[in-house]
Amino acid sequence: MRLKTFHAKSLQDAMTLVREQLGDDAIIVATHESGGPQGARVTAAVEREEDPFENLGGDIDVIETITEALERHGTPPDLTDRLVDEASMLEESDPIKALTHALGEVFRFDPLPDDTNGRPLILIGPPGVGKTVGCVKLAARAALKDPRTEALIQDETDGRKATNRLPVHLVGADKLKIGAMEQLALYADKLGANMIVVSDGKILSQALQKLPPDELIVIDTPGTNPFNLEELAHIVELAEAGDLEPVLVLTAGRDAEEATDLAKAFRPAGATRLLITGYDIARRLGSMLAAAVASDLALSDIGRSPRIADGFQPLDPATLARMLLPKPKKSSEKQTAS
Image 1 (cartoon, one colour):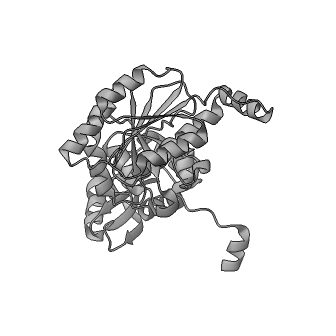
Image 2 (cartoon, rainbow, N blue to C red):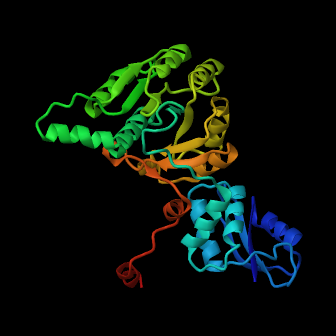
Image 3 (spheres, helix red, strand yellow):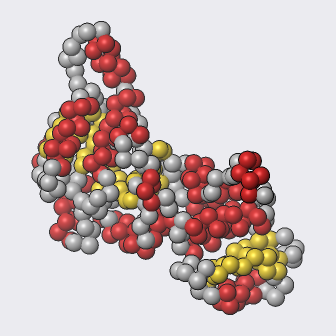
């Protein structure tokens, strides 16, 4: 049996797609009409030996579980169809394994480095997405991984005053937000990191040339409206101040079309990774999936908490699949429900 899911504005339109692509021999195995922006969904099957989707397989329960999960996360119908098609390629009875395969085929995953030997990171994004806290989380994670940090901690434990700072530099380029630099300076002091304040791309370039290449540099930027050309130009200037790694930061839970428009608008800044924040509040990731695909951004890490100590969780297909799918009920819960 070959399975494929179709999305359309109405059940009638979805049925039309089924007949056009699978023919009159298609068997309707499941239908769903939400009445919302997701419209209608039809899962159909064909029994023919030769058909346009001869490589498709899959278990109907698995397909339904994945489809419903993606819809619950607000994933756009075309992206849902694409992921479901990829999941259907496997004769797999485990939704997590099937969705893991699909995510690996559709998305790129590239977690941010957790060491201090790499290109400077510059976090960009709209206001209120958590760039400043994100910079500190990345700095703290890298500092804890660096062997030089262990030596500094040992000095303090032995009663000797540490003469060296941590191999981390926090660069503040956000002079627009009231208190932003003071907040970053406070975090830098707690980490024992170096703190630098710059106002434009030229000063940032000069500062970068003086910093050691084997130490982590994380650059905080002002919240930017990418549809304002003056603000966007300032971010592009900062991003091009050296051999930097721009990282786009967006919060989960946005409208999918809005998130996609934002990601596309930030393209001139050259980001190749998407860092997701606010998952502890939003709990829905469909908009982030849409933004990543539309702007060809690799999914890097996700923030589940605003606390610095909680850091970021690196993303990979299996981790993301578990976050997207509902948690299986415990045996005690199943007995209670029955």
